[in-house]
Length: 553
Image 1 (cartoon, rainbow, N blue to C red):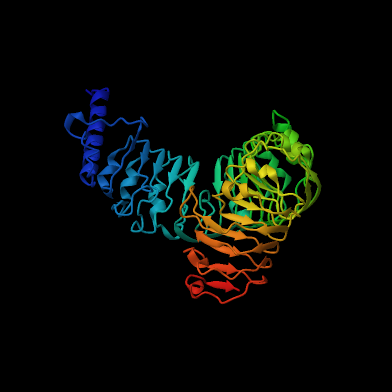
Image 2: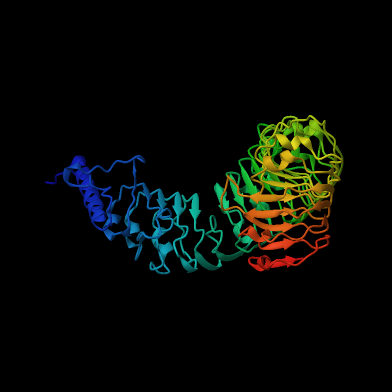
């Protein structure tokens, strides 16, 4: 006669809790806990629950004990050690055998845990965690090649972070995601070959990635974050990128992209909005070799927040006038060092969220008026330099913005010194070089801009006497040093006494005539002084060689 018994569920649960309790108490005993944060871990008062519900997060230091692997029901484990202070011991692991017991684990964060002694088979241990969806192992001192796997069990993995380790050699076919800042290398075809259709975040920054983007990249329709910055990706921007309708962030700057930007993007027919890349907020394409006109498809990116086409590209033609009308969410617009021509669209003045605008070093021309800045209340950086603009604003104009950086060099702003600058309370970086301004610098200017760390008014027609004493002692940042360039003007009289945190002063090519004062070197930070091509006479004071690295007299 045989008997059948139903399993004693309560007894089974009690055994699991007891194993969990023993494992965590053993874990606690192996930690250095000077603040006694784990004082509640004792006897029957032990509580496994935490804010992550089925997870565990702690703060401590020391070796992670093997018994911790008995937590077979654990789903969330945060051992992030990246905020540990240098004088603390931190966390380290001698081997990863204990990890194989965490069979229910979905999230494992071991950032900055020292794994230098775990050996070359670390991925084999982690490969047993079939439920794992997120794995963070950045800055763990992992080194050598990434071990191969004959069978990939990490089929649920969505996020993998291996940044800032010492991994090298080629990337295995089964593995790529967060691999930036290692010495890895692979081809675009190898990594983006179509096996990762459900990947959501892909960071391949600075890994010597090379070749063209394969068409299979367009199959990664779950992708929200794609960072290919600083590699050797070649070819053009393919139109199939438009299929990535969930993409929020796309950075492919500092590569070797050539050709034109696509006139149209694929995938529009599959988007409810009937617009390309409806989720895209950040598009960075700087430091490439792109040519041609800026296509109208850029104006259709309805949720775009940041656009960077700067530095090294040769994009030509005008800035689309419709851009300022359609891109109401844009906060960052960088178009410098291209070959754009035409005028600055007045519609840019409608970008009420814009905080950064740089169109410097192009071939733009025309008159810039108050309308161009009409609603730019949040603007903090404005760079119109190295174009052929003429700024024509009313003498009583009060800009809507409060900029911190203002570069207008080579724009025509004269003849009067711009009175509207008096309204700017946050300026720290001002460049008005070669702007055709003349006359004297107003007295209010020196009082108003005590926190200017960079001032360039060179190559103008400014005249008169400077203040007898120039002092730079910023209230915003005591450690900041200043660079002032007043060269190539018609300043006359006594050269000023300098004090405070000056680093570079250029007074050359003026009409200063008085003897150099003995206390010109009163500034302890001053290292570069240029006073050549003036009418200064007399002896060079002995104190002048006290601090300088370079003196042009």
